[in-house]
Length: 392
Image (tube, rainbow, N blue to C red; front, side, top):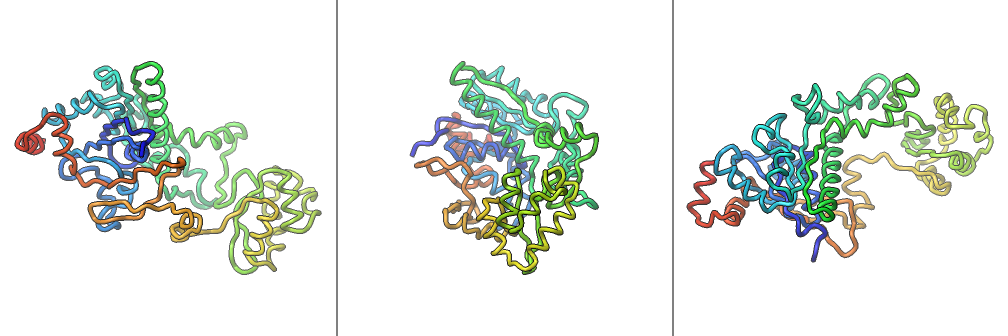
């Protein structure tokens, strides 16, 4: 099978989630990804938890289909091995601590100056300029700095997101930049240096709340599971003790909802509810009207009416519900992936290419590919390889 990226070599000095997630998406579609790790301990994300046969769930998620080269890039041997790799590489990614990459000549600009063919990506917390450039950054802390907690949660209590959304956003923008760089190189023959920061990535995701606040001179309210600026949109109690979720996007849907779901066209023209802005002003009254109509119904009946009215809706699933979701199981969205602790069922990547099966290769152990990679780089004897690793 041929893959879209099977002629691409990626070298990544990576840890945690953002950079590993970007490189994993490249590996999924055929790129050869060599992950540079610290000897013995490796990427610290390996120790986040031990729930998957002694291995970290987050590490397994972000590191399949890669090769691990465990070297100390501060030693002469480590530097030489890395430079040999970079001579052959198409992509370089690094998310070292603030300032470390520049000190070691491993920032994107320095890499491209030495290796003009490379698409080089710096991933940092706050970017290479500004008063926060040297500040350490982790997902939750950037959620705080970017204002996300101020809009997420209930009126009484702000909440962090249960996912590493800052890392995920950053990884996706890094991936986007890498693919743009490769496309540009196809046209110009030249590499590209660029940077992506956790803060800037989250700033982009916070654009709508920021613009809303700037325009209204008011903070966007925290509304729990409800939508902050659309009504009705969120959870509604049903007579059988369950909760259904649905959202109205426009006035056509609102009229359909009143006619088919509430079976009361008068609600649609009620002066309190004739527009979205009015429905927001009278949200509690609207909630009462809707739930009074649902009081004699089951969730199955409500969901059936919502589907009939072409109103988007969903159930309140838990994570186990996702794992066993019919849409996952019936479409075969798992693959068994090898790890050093056995095989694990992992989700396929979201991109679906007809006739092309994602790589879904092994999650590597620390330094698992040292001998193979170092031999490729000219350390042909076993003795030389062992010396390089020991000194590193």
